Image (cartoon, rainbow, N blue to C red; front, top):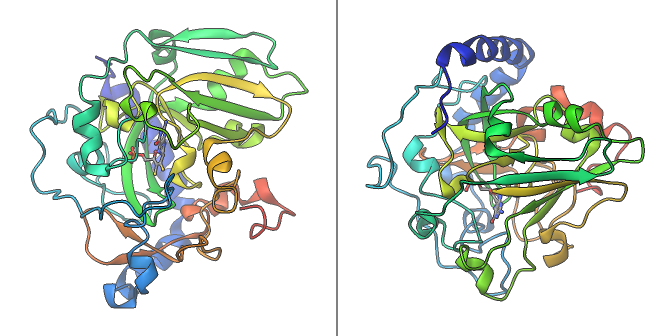
Length: 342
Ligand code: MTE
């Protein structure tokens, strides 16, 4: 079990909340308006069915309709929440998604394509011992054990997560800035990108035994995106270690990008010179790009990205550019045509 003393988390959390609160004051007003203005009747038909169509979908067949989980009753497998987050909402005033919903509505194709059965199928997945090998174009390659990774100061970060399928959650993550780890391994001047890999182990991950996707799950970031303070490696949420379904023992969280960038159960991080090819780019290059920045103005080829369904809440909310983190990250993309670089 990860032991995190709340006293370690609070100062950083308060610091972050204050900083984001000040920066987001304008956006908060806009966000409140959006919440009030959005109703289910405004939702175009294709928007309402994007999740049923199962994106990112490895098969041409639509997946089974995914019903909204019942977030009022936690499943029997969900342990009691140990550490209460320091706030009950994000900096835009959106309430946290419940612990039960975060852990029972999951995209984790290594276990299942059915969001609501991932938790049951992944139950018992052993994530200790675990190592993450960090190498490539670095001065100090290192293989980190989970205990090594937990030595980095763990912070609480409340982030919105916007899935490309047009649903979203507000999650109180525990983790540490990826930049802290990168400073330790010292990328060389040739390193321009990071390439992340999930565990490849069909014996333990039944989804990897079915044809369809080119395993292992691979994702990538540009080095400056990876060094950005908002980018974290998460080890827990709601003050508890990650469960298998949310990517135990360690996953990436990049809150201004669509959720598929936030690769789970990472075993390898390579610093590389060329833009890596992700699993989704290999699968469907017309639908999933490398950048995948949340952008309400660029529809997915099969549905609009203008609004999203906040899990556990009725109706839809407007999707914000960069998922509401534009003030912090838009400078990373200066001069780029964000409609083309999707
Ligand atoms: N990482 C791996 N290895 N396998 C996956 O199937 N799904 C991605 C991302 N990371 C996925 C993954 C997608 S599409 C989303 S939206 C988020 O994880 C979902 O995270 P959650 O299940 O914790 O909500």
